[in-house]
Length: 407
Ligand SMILES: [Ca+2]
Ligand SMILES: [Ca+2]
Image (cartoon, rainbow, N blue to C red; front, side, top):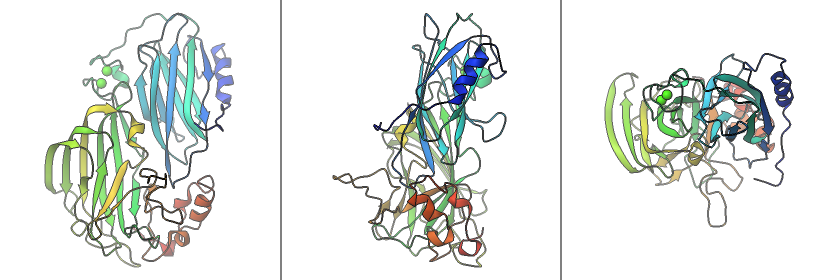
């Protein structure tokens, strides 16, 4: 953490304490809880990230003991009443939960929901500039033991367990929570590209299965090749750092979207440079990057990685993990920035002007037409990166219609 870190004031605290004393309706229980908030804020270095990972450290205790069995959840509400669970874990015997979750940079607020002794407590958490949510919840009364229905005895009640009969998994986290990410590469690395970000484009979403401790047990990926505005040929590869002996189930579909062309299951001793999409000369029927061209979707793949040992989400990095382009013609691999550095600490995947060769954009992004620089096609793009990601955070939603490929 940087020296600039500071505790973040949270108006929800005041509201909570008021409600714990009998007012309001958010606290749906009778168990009084005191909250110590020490969220960590900071100013993370900007590397063109449109998502971020936020750490979560929660301790739940009653006056005499850790409050074992308490369930901690993070929900991305986005205005909906219930919201999507983006993190879930039961506290350890010591009363602790430690983990992380991923949100788009445009998300400024999440819901922290803690179930203590069968009672539900919710807090809205302002996550602007927050890198870690750190909260100490002290229950100021004795809790009467309650019985929960937990068929697989993983500590997560059936009603909150996405896999009520599988003790190795308890939650499904969808990334993004709605729709897809668009992942786009410039393929001339190490030469600077023309920044049209249409050389190789896929749409992608992941699903993570979390175990009761909030660690990732399985990862499913859904990928479709959607543009190739380039002369080169490529394959798409995935590295999951530190993951060994995982089981990979891969299914590849034809252009009709439904015919299974290949299916395999294998144990991957070291999960490095695992091929997700084969030669790009075989996976798309049109380059989908010229003005007036009709969009023709390419082939897609679905895969599931079952980890031999669950891992903490932050060990895999930000979205889209280490998904990288292998350029067949040049022999170069092109990674997202922020992952590989030389001996002097210089990022190997930022060009001399500080630009990456790979970007991830939430949603169905319209990539620039051939030779149309992203700066021109997206007028707010420059504002975004010149402000180190603090202004025009949703720059990708406002293209100039005649400068981007219309799908
Ligand atoms: Ca369970
Ligand atoms: Ca379960």
